[in-house]
Length: 213
Image (cartoon, rainbow, N blue to C red; front, side, top):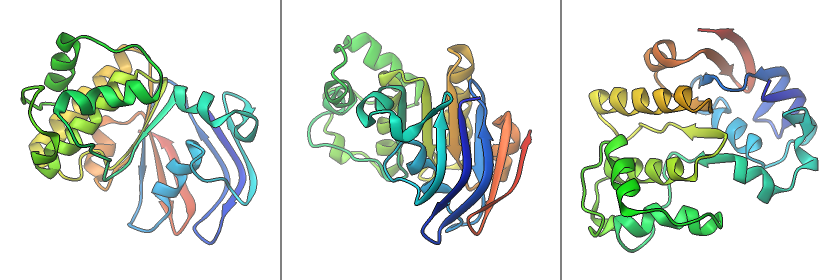
């Protein structure tokens, strides 16, 4: 198992008696807006801490793992990701700078853009991209970090249905090829049923079902 939650409570947003999220699988978290899906992702990445209970990552309590060490293994992409001033290249590389990882070649950057279906020159200004293009650029930045675990919060919310399907398909194929753990919040039950190995449904802060797809 990758994550285990026991008696986890956070404000009045989440109340999870027990939850296991498997490693090296694609897990989709579904539920209505405001049900606590994003809060769950933020807790897994230690951006917020539970009020009571315990979260384990690879059988170690999350509180015993330093945030820096954890975020080398786990990378989260929020629904409205940060786009920095500068070029497409600058935005792809900035994650590697922050993570103190080696800078990669332009060839790899272009390959990554191809994977997220963003056919833009590396020298284009990032701030001039559309909402959907910015989302794909941020997804490319996350891919370059090559973490063990991807936490994606509605990674395709700004995309049309065809592009959404294309991008998620590529992400899932990548995760399976390189044995990654992909945990994705999605508004689309269709996406969840089509792509996931495991589906967690949250309603009003409680896990109402957890099952293999």
